[in-house]
Length: 513
Image (cartoon, rainbow, N blue to C red; front, side, top):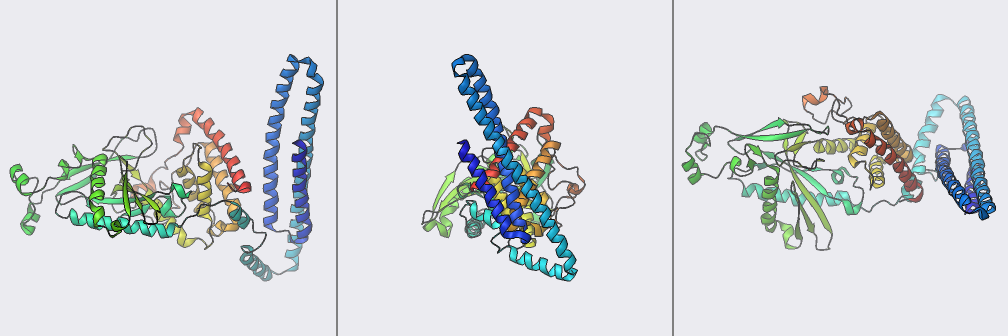
């Protein structure tokens, strides 16, 4: 096994030497980047071998004490391991020396080229090189794109299918509820990874939509900030108040005032107020709203044009309405409809989404930034180059996160910060590996400092297109890593998982999965 590993490394070095011979003075950035990655990969392999050597030596010492008859065998085995280690170390030393020489040679070539060409000619050459880079055989981004096993998805088409279904539902609901005092449903807004264009795996796609709720006639919603608890996320309660409609009643001649008409007359001539249907006390109840919406979907399905050939399957969920629709070709779409109340005229809502807490009261509505995030990615889609790889970076992050303690939202926040700090021209396919390395370095720095700022609080780089409550602009940034400050053991675990994350990224880049 040692001999095989040794000759494998020699083949790698020979390949690099050959590439260096081929490119000569035309050594390009892609080749240097590929060599640097190979060196990174081999250095990691050497570290693992060193650890195995130490472990094997300890085991041999123990066996030597127990069985003196095998002393010569143990010494021979240890010598073999040391030979293997020093052989790899020598090859790595040769590799790093070669990289240094090539980099020096490249700088010399660049310098001489600068002296021989004018500034205008140099700009023209750089523009032509940039245009040709994406089609070059040495395009490192293309190499890894073709190497990685990306999921087969058609999010744009499926997005439209799901949006049509939900829009039809909302139209039917509004017709059914037109004379009631249930919340007034607004057009649904697509949120989450599927509507942002980067859902990680085909089997994990859930199309999430947020349905804004407006108060019915004679009612008003008031948001009350609740206890923040152990996490930086903010929780709210939606207090429902009755309003006097006596003036409007005289004009419309239809609605009775809940405040000033006798209860008997109200019960006889008018439906119950929202306080008596979907509230617990004076507060809008998430679970009652979810059950009500669940029944609406079941009842309204037959009115949808898709119901004649498609199949509806309701799925369990206590704080949203989740269901599956199956097309006649057996293709399925999982749809989750959440509910929210808008904060003023901003893109920030309080919603029925699940929280990280073990127990969440049914009257608690967490603050949601999902609409603002979806708007951010739509804004970036109009700004980035046509071959931008920022969504691929998010996909890759989600792939390597499976089974690790970091949430997808953590890496998503990192990418959002980097999208507003790194020039958008640097997110093309050929920059894929560099941007993934930037993401990992940013995460590592945040872990060391035990601080990752929420993207929308106190961040001057948020695009003006996104409408935030005025208090957000002057607020202190929320630290998403606050729990690492309070719990040293959690911080140690996070640093360990970061190393696992690095290993997974290496495996994804070199093996494609």
